[in-house]
Length: 540
Image (cartoon, rainbow, N blue to C red; front, side, top):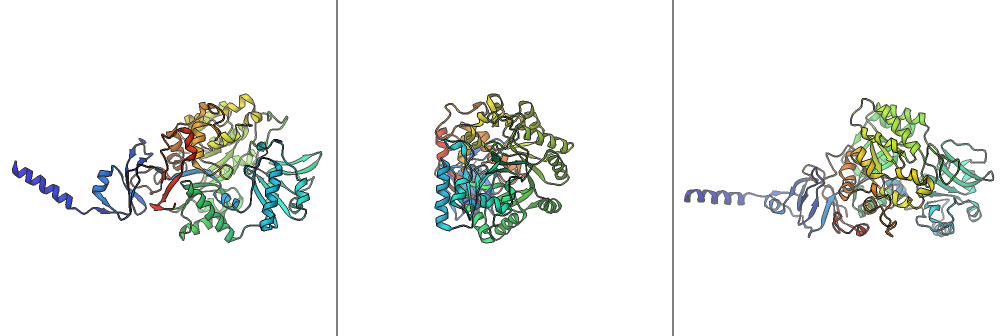
């Protein structure tokens, strides 16, 4: 017995003398939601060479590892690095350099902001974004007369909050060559008494885009870095940019390679012939920070500007159905072209008519294919009989804050019956098995905490409506966190490298100011990302 005790003491002493493994970072005393397959929890993690090498109990980790950099989380909650599954990252950065019209309560306020902006920096072509006539007392589209008076010699283009309409002045119309006789399919040049009002919806906007001065390289770099700073502030570590051109993708890649841009980008290639010819031929582009393997297609416009394509007329505009931005035959042809490549097809579809066009095109093109993970971006208004299409491996990529932004007028647009199939997140989840969650910023605000709140509470910040908007389609907190992490990663073919805190995965994680899974629901919007890590390196 004495020999056995001596032997065990010797073994214990030997093990205690074994050197601990030296690693880059240890975090302990944490409340960690790993979002692994069993949604397990832990209280410590270890990072080395940019990856998680251990996740578990503090006692085990302290016994086995040592690091110069150790963080006592003091009980704070840690979640995987948050992913925005649908946004406009580059656009967010560019928006920091134009007139901010978000939150304007009247057209007069829009004009005042434009005038104030112009007195400070005298632009040759004034750009702005963020107005929404639905927030004004007079909820009709504005017209250009006052812009013409204020800026007779300077072109002005003010983008609606959803990115699907411009208000432009006469100078901009002249530069773009738009007259009363101009005809453009896939949108509308809005007229009153046969005169152009200055509002352009969807495809006609491209004629103005063609004459807007292009930003130089320095401006582009500043835009990307400004956007990154805003995203890190809110705990985002990966962004899915829904529509980028080759030159911007290559600039992002170069900045990531030199270490000037740390955020990870899942880039959806804008649907142009030049882009398709280049990327479909080149194939998937994958680095540690950049993933290029999808094409962004626009099916229709937006509901707020009445550009979404509906099966029956708008309830608040007789005889108006909205419009397909990309014709039906072109969507079908694109699906056949993209399925022949390694790329994913991600199509913007808001109205019920656009959604069924896209779903049928996907079904036809994907026959016999497995694990292609094509997405419907927004999937906003679905006819009851069409939800079952999502059982076939098609992923709904949805933005919960759209529901709480649009709920004030969505029923006016759709009517009491059709609105039941709108913003139907839980129904989509039940059919598809997962949902990828995003914001669509800068259409909505960057904060993923507002996304979380809208998904769970289905209310705005004023706690309206009482009891929540169509609460049968609310998501649980666990479903919501998955939609912002592992499910979003899966939708990007990246579930084996990110989206959960597990050994071998990239060490992207966010330390929160409170427990997002238990804090009172109305406190969720006030959460903050206190520390943010990418590859185990602190970026905030």
